[in-house]
Amino acid sequence: MSKWLTNKWVLMLLSLMGAVLLFSYVSSLNRHSQQSGSISIQTQETVTNVPVVANISEDQYVVTGLPSSVLVTLEGPTSYVRLAATNRNFTVETPNIDDLGVGEHTIQLVVNGLSTEVTGRITPNTISINVERLVTKEFPVTIYDKNNQKLDEDYELDTDTVTVTGAQSSIDSIDEIRGTVDTSLNSESVQEVQLLAFNSDGQSVSATINPVQVTVTRDESAQLTSKEVSVKLEGQNENEDYRYSYSTDVDKITVIGTNKVLSDVSDITVVADVSGVTDGETINGSIRLPVGVTIDDNTEIPITVKMTRNQSSDDAKSTES
Image 1: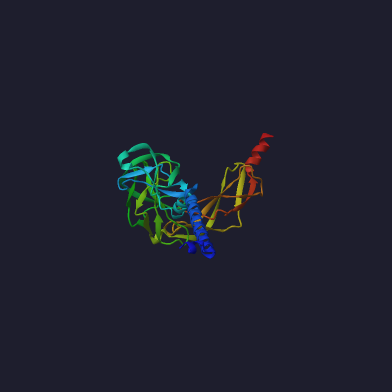
Image 2: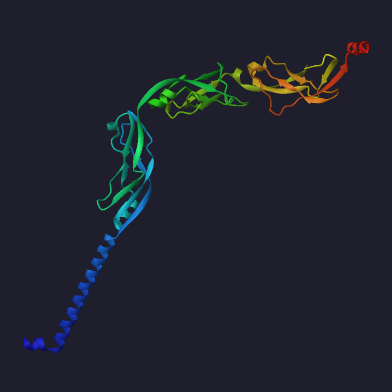
């Protein structure tokens, strides 16, 4: 045995094996130290647009003032923070709003679902909210044309009333549920009209309308059409010392209106205001339109004015001289 231990080659082999084992042990310690170091390094990362979950009975209450999303700054070991930021498997929630009841409240948002190794800081964290009861009320529907004129009996709705749901204050402020229909030339006789809620100042009110659309059907007599009619000239502010005559190169003018309205229109009066006008001068006349009749905005009627002094006026001047 002593000879074997004193053999040079055996000693060299044992020394080599010991060196290999020692190297492996040190390498293992280094790898473990590096892994532990990577986990223990602290970092932070900001996650944007994190939705806010409102813990509220949506069939009973409405909350205003609550942001739709917030920023969350994550802090903790690098690997844990990166995993949470990538997966976004956490939520930002309110306390139980039902327990707060109706009124104004200040609440703090909380982060749920994070690893115990990671903390989350919310921006903004403290929120002022207002809680109101959810109410439903029935309202009549009013339809207008694009000139803000109410439609008459020539238009029929598939429903005259709708139900509106919203916060108590919103419902109380509603003055009218209205829609706008296209009554222009060649518009459809049947149209789907979107409804909106408005207060007495003409401002829109946030509320849920059911149904949100109504079908508006126009009677054929209310279809807009165009028609050429004669031009009739008249004078205004004439001087009694003169006789006036008027002429124009425009014999006809195109007017727009419903079939029913235009059936009674055969001519349109155009007025020449002759105050300050001299003989032979041409001016633009003022077009008088019946109710429900329109024309192209660029339509102009040039009128030439002829003035002849009255003989009685000349005789009166001779007598005075």
